[in-house]
Amino acid sequence: MRILFVHKGLPAQFTHLIPALSSRGDELWAIGMHQKHIDELPGINFIKYHLHRGNGKDTYPLASELESKIIRGEAVARVAAQLAEGKFTRGYPWEPDIIIGHPGWGEMLFIADVWPHVPQLHYVEFFYGVRGTDNDIHDIHATPKTWHERARDRVKNANLLSNLCQMSAGLCPTKFQHGLLPDWAKIKTHVIHDGIDTNWLTPDPRCEVVVPPTPERPYSIVLNGTTDIITFINRTFEPYRGVHVFLDALVKVQALHPTAHTILVGEDTPNVAYGARRSDGKGWLTALRGQLGDKLDWRRIHHLGTVNHHTLRNIYRVSKAHIYLSYPFVLSWSLLEAMSCGALVIGSSTAPVQEVITDKINGLLVPFEDYDALANIILNALKKSDSIVGIRKQARKHIIDHYDVRTLLKRQLSLIDSLVPSKKIIA
Image 1 (cartoon, rainbow, N blue to C red):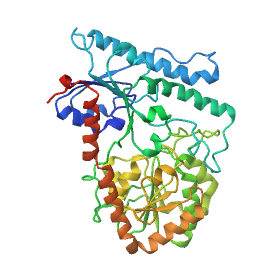
Image 2 (cartoon, rainbow, N blue to C red):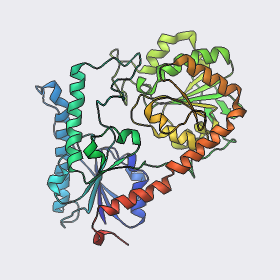
Image 3 (cartoon, helix red, strand yellow):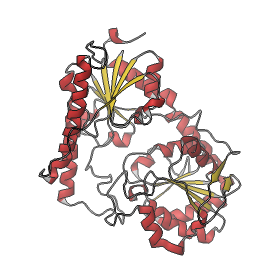
Image 4 (cartoon, rainbow, N blue to C red):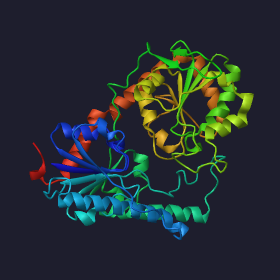
């Protein structure tokens, strides 16, 4: 069949799905803004869209976010119309049998106006402003939202509601995220995770991680399973993922465990993936380092920045305690990947994490903001690492049983095929 993907930064959540569709002979096209990684995937024709204008200078502030999404949606629809007219197919009109995309940035808003009768499958990631989410978590950096901030969430949902209405079906990665949707939207949205490659993300006690030289230390360090290593991964280091709680806990851990090393993975940047940027223009890691100063031994904290997936896998493998803290928000792949590699995950007892981890069965849980309790659990895990072998094994088993990509791909492919008339499906 002919399939069109729409996503600002492909392949993203469709990393496994695109090759699976290509391998069975489907004709794949994609419209997006960035193609940094799409070239790594064979069998897909990529069309880049461009924004022809930015937000208006006099746009009413509450309307600016919706305006951004409309501008992006129009840009995508313009390219889609050109594809339909044959601009990219040597003059032959082209129509997809199904459109698969992410509605979050507004890109899907007007696709139905180009192809009114083509079914759409949307990746439904988050619905804003719902109680029990990032909207009202108890945290020092999460102040209660003003009515104006709640109004902004309502405007964000205006785009999402439009897309929920026009989609034929939705694809949601977790029950937590699915539970945030309006009841009528839940009915046509399926909970199927993107999937984890458990055959590749495996334990390996023989591996090691090389920490490169720094200006203060002009030589490399090799860390392996003989060292007590604590790991923390956060794309841009932000309160949403608990970097402040973790570093506060690390003060006590380092004081009582003078040989433990910590590996940090992520970008120290003023830009954040989730939540608000700091008003002083600093990255959260830089700011927290300044606040904590010599309370932490930074010689034993190794910030590796952004690393490739092979290095990330080795970091999971050497970890004695992998810390995953999160507001009730979108669940990170890193949690599942670490568990697949047999790491001991110490996570926050927030809804998305509790969906995956059962305390003392396949991981350990701690209240999000309780850094002292987190420190004690880390210290105990490092001290009694032999006694938690069973938890690590159960962590991997849970991911194999519930999040293995081969099983979930079958469900995703079945859902896609169910939305397309049978005559369109390639046998």
